[in-house]
Length: 195
Image 1: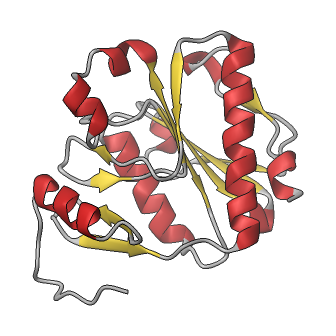
Image 2 (image 1 turned 45 degrees about the vertical axis):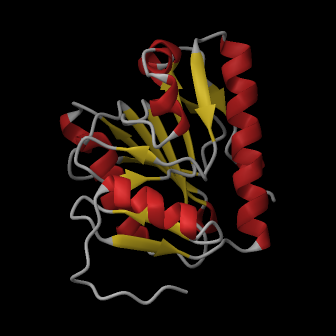
């Protein structure tokens, strides 16, 4: 566990150096340059996250959409200067291909088009909601916050006035459709709850 003064801030390039020097640490960088340390997940949460990734991969394959899927250890340099790692994320292929090789190898300087956060028992839901707000503010067109303990999904959409301050909330949905942003992209969240 890292213990650093709260007044200490980092640039994204300094953050990359900290990550390289501490490969076992699970870190993010907030928009103010402060480190955010995350704990490793428990086994059930890890299994849920793996199921989420598999479901998203299969949904992308079946939809035929030109999308690139990323796992929970992928950091993205967002426009606000933060470096965040959603539990799962999707980037439109043309945006990914527009990046240089160096940008792809580092923290890609973009906000994913679809971000997914999967709450673990130790996560504070309000902190996850603030992350969802930040993703949308930084350019994500769609965000899913999955809350397995209450079998609930919150949907955050860019430019949707009804989700700016409060997301659309669905209790135990059988299907989760990405809608017009990603036509044909569908997952079944109950597979995630059942882990």
